[in-house]
Length: 95
Image 1 (tube, one colour):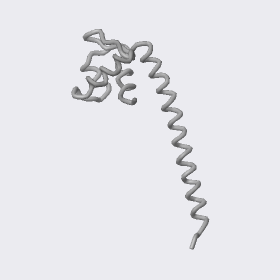
Image 2 (image 1 turned 45 degrees about the vertical axis):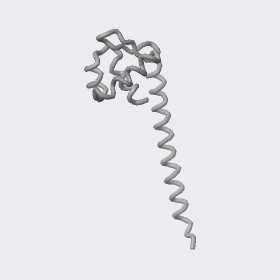
Image 3 (image 1 turned 180 degrees about the vertical axis):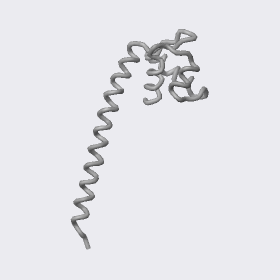
Image 4 (image 1 turned 90 degrees about the vertical axis):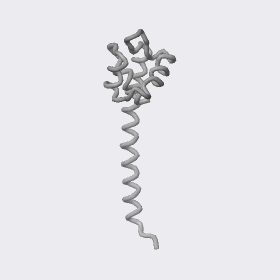
């Protein structure tokens, strides 16, 4: 999902394949698969030589951004819970 989001960000204003490779920090050997998936799902419009994020692609980016934010918050809470658990376990000495 992150690679797809990176490619969609890179293609928001329109970009050539080479530009997408550099902007999304990918290589030519794998970008074709992602471009194919994105175009087949209607997230990216291929109008050679340009690729442009569609409205559906922009919606994906919005939902993905919300997901990343929520996921980050959950991870913070999980770490806090784990630290609390460790602190409680350290208070109990089992022999």
